[in-house]
Image 1 (cartoon, rainbow, N blue to C red):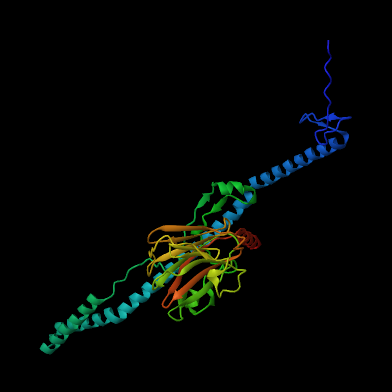
Image 2 (cartoon, rainbow, N blue to C red):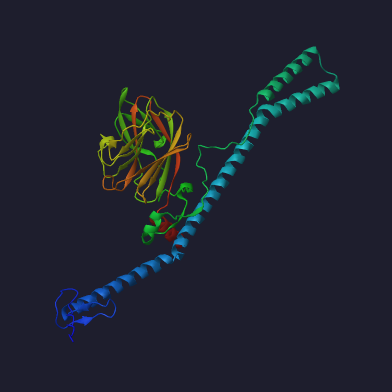
Length: 382
């Protein structure tokens, strides 16, 4: 009868025999030198797991975030109510002024003539000359009433309107992957509008390179050079976080639409802005510019017309921009490579033909976490 030879046990790390120990967890064999290393590795893994549990537990505590968002809602409510009261008071004042002007110009003079006619009629003190004069005056006031302007209440689209807000919960894959880095519960930034200039500034045209002029306190820019050329105009804001929306109106264009997009704030030389690596955006809907390079046109689609409106959306959180054409409801999207276009970003508009003219007609600015924290701390102090 042959006896089986015992299997030699070796260390799972150095593969040497000798005195060995078996781990009761992984069932692997280790020598005295490496058993401590194995135990230390397991201890570090447990410590890392405990830290991840701590991070996840911290993010599950949403009270502070809800408090910040509640403060944001309170601010929106107060601002909206204030705007409504101010607008209503202005409308009542204008209505009263219109009534007083109408009484002064029409009602009171006509009542005097009516009193004169009745007094002369009662006293039988009138002639054909008086009758002719009264008929002429009556006809004059009848014409005034027929031509009088109609007073009405209009929706002023040019004014700073009150945007409604709503709560939304992001459930896309990108948000789930970044759960530990930030909250998934946010207010719909596309509908928020605040006037606190210490935190946010309404977008305006600011820095110009090339033959262009800025009018109306930075809301309008126009090409002012020769027949053809390039004028780069940047906005006043530098975007590092949040989602921001800027709405433009094409007041005048000759052939191609102006360029709408972004450029890195680190790019200080705007002389050849369209050729810099940090420029991204669109000429029309058939020619995008990615990292300073024009993509090949897929057609000759000149859909953008004079008086059309477009909205540029700058999403710093997800590193992307959008351009929406409101008349056709078409939407374009560009992901941004922050290696070529590092934050912060600035709005960039490029005009290149005589007569090109663009107006900023509105938009919204998202409150970042820093803005929210500042608002909350200020509110607590008061």
